[in-house]
Image (cartoon, rainbow, N blue to C red; front, top):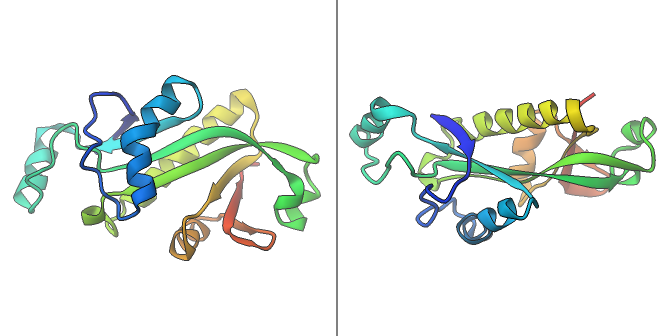
Length: 172
């Protein structure tokens, strides 16, 4: 599998992660936001003919080399230090620059196989690399539900004050 920047050649139309808002955003908004510099979307697609053949032989005949298997979006943002835990807030000025992980989704038929973990690792790596040039204190995410919040918490994201679906991962 490879992770690359979203382009118009990726097949987004049939993407279904089980959350209509995420599906529609990928299908209708992601490229517009990218062209306007609002966010950057990265997609996981099959890498090479061997992986495609493996997908086909294991019951996924609809997957092609341009099929989006999962995606995430990153954007720059500012948050108030008051929004994060008191322990962390002491380290920062009132407003802090962060990278916002706006969306992360996996096709329903591929969920639970580790692709989400791989996409999150790539998002963190890209965010950290960008922070070395731009400055970003960490990664902020608004989880869609408690299960998503638990997913992020497993990887070190901390729940923000009185907002169980808002999480923060410090980078430094």
